Image (cartoon, rainbow, N blue to C red; front, top):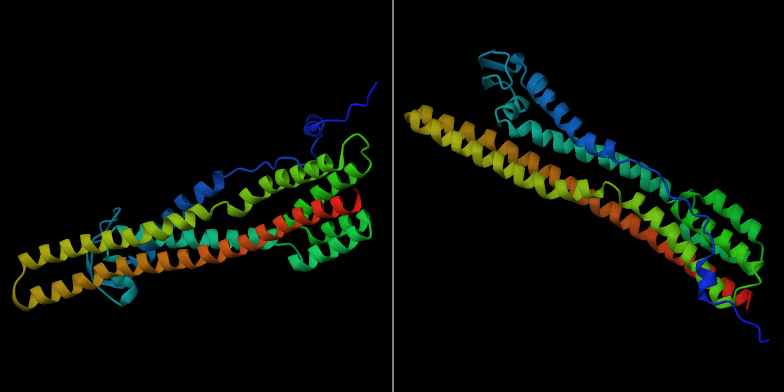
Length: 287
């Protein structure tokens, strides 16, 4: 009876060592709300403190009436109720920038990614998988995790006598792809907040400016002479604080979004190179 070679179905049955990572994004959605609350408290009780104004009414409400500000910071209070939202958006950007710096920095590993891949390639060329795995433990990060998962499958395929070389390579490639699919979401997580705020903050600032201008021209119609000119100039100055906050927040969000996407692209390239290294090495050494 002729021998029956294993088919690709056998390769599909191979188990994977990659385990899904359990993570919750509830804190990420709570952070913007907390930042907006902090922004309001800062606007209401710090910037809007009665000590920063010479006039107005202390009614203790949600938006106390203030007048004749002392200093530029106090003028920001008169920019309107959108000012605390803009402050909250800026705090949100700062929060996620710090969070992404920590996460992406950890994902990059402890050493240079190209140097790490060269070391693994050297150990694979010498067929020393234990040292290659040890390099992954030293490197850590996303590239180290993906390489380690691939190396474990690599080691398993060496002792497998049922599958053809092409099928073994496919199994290694599949393991790398599954490990990559678990690592990439962690790298891109929360970047949506930066990209969204980059657009929303500018529009929010312009909206605050328009509302401030409407309020200023309304006051202009009720006044006359020199008083009207003073109220108009004061109102325009206050309205432009919204624009400044919105554009400033948007600029920071855009810059940091581009910084993080560039670093993530570098890590992704390292992951792709890791998978290529494993498959090519196995195909060359275990024909």
